[in-house]
Image 1 (spheres, one colour):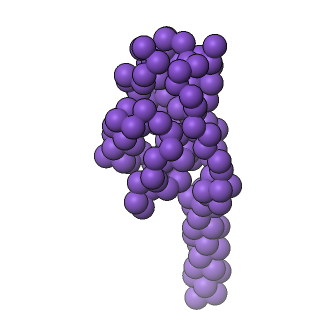
Image 2: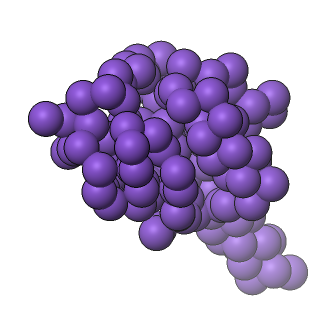
Length: 131
């Protein structure tokens, strides 16, 4: 009977460590990204071309490819998605940026961190095309 109690204790500790690790993975860096500033880019200064930008931030690491034609964002493609992708959110964000031709958009409800991570990648891509 003592062996069973010992094994139950060991398994409980292992499960506890796994749960703590999962919470760390899910939450690490969240506050920094939430507070991160996104700078709107003056598209009149961005040359036509295809620019790749990335953002590194734990599970929100991503990279995008931005196509600029006639000083307008005409396409945005996700090259590397975040670890836990929200496809609808990503598509809504891309459409908002293309429609407004600006990074100054409202964060998508319930996806503020994902929104900011993608916006930072888009910002980093556009910076590469500034004349």
